[in-house]
Image (cartoon, rainbow, N blue to C red; front, side, top):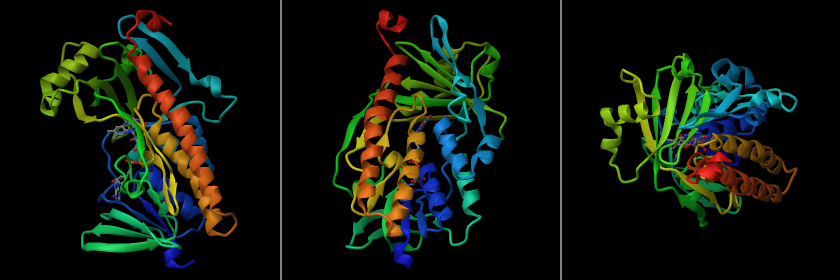
Length: 367
Ligand SMILES: Cc1cc2nc3c(=O)[nH]c(=O)nc-3n(C[C@H](O)[C@H](O)[C@H](O)COP(=O)(O)OP(=O)(O)OC[C@H]3O[C@@H](n4cnc5c(N)ncnc54)[C@H](O)[C@@H]3O)c2cc1C
């Protein structure tokens, strides 16, 4: 292959790095363009589901995942006023999967694992501080216009995969609707070293309430000793300085579980929540995967997992096209399959998860 035959992957998040490793493992030249200087390590996704673990096992990554993550063997559903409602044992999946648990592992650590595995290959071309500005297509390739520290450059390739997240510039180069909606409220994540496990909480918990629901997760944290994340909805009219004020975050977490002393809050962040699926994952030689293609609320921890499944579906198809074994119609199948499951399952399930945790009607809540 010539240099212009390389695949351009845009975005060094978990989906982009996974795509890069899948290409490297099959000897396909690629360049990964990442706008940032380092892997973004703010608290975001942290749940890896069994089918995703199976995919990572298929590429030899599973030991690294299991070494660094926390296994969640059960998760709990609470009513905030009545207490524990259901305790789901994931062990019932043991005849269906070798990984009958969720693995809590922060998404930036997935990037680190992919980086470590990529380091074992020659000709890995990862360019940090390379922000894609726009993409154009020719008859037999794509041209990316990229901002670097030394100015604007163009980079050519055979295909481009936009794994550049919710604000994807690759997506914006396609003239298609990003259908869906944005919730009025934002979600606040508070991270604390306080051990909620001593009160009987599982590593994953959903605490339903019509006024102020909470979700509680335990992730490994920077040193692997464990950090609890408390997620809750925030009034859209409150300014950020009020939301982040020390007394406000203490009051919020005390409302969740009162105690005599302050909580040790080591991190706080807030984000907008959307439910959208892009109208097409393919426009000629431009392809989309991950949050660039679909975004959803985090209840159920599904967004990241879906993105990983996207590239496991896409990359073998793309390789078969590059190697002349299949026509481009297999890329349309990628679009049809992955967009359909995003519309019919990912969106439906995550919207339902959010509805369930904030149900107003007592009869529905009881059911
Ligand atoms: C604050 C927050 C909290 C979340 N919490 C959860 C959660 O608890 N559970 C869950 O399942 N999901 C959660 N999500 C969603 C989850 O993080 C995403 O589904 C996941 O990150 C998708 O991975 P990705 O690789 O597609 O995109 P991203 O992780 O967004 O990665 C995109 C990468 O592309 C780079 N990039 C962007 N634009 C360009 C450009 N023009 N040129 C080059 N590089 C570019 C970015 O720097 C970034 O590294 C959360 C999202 C946010 C924003």
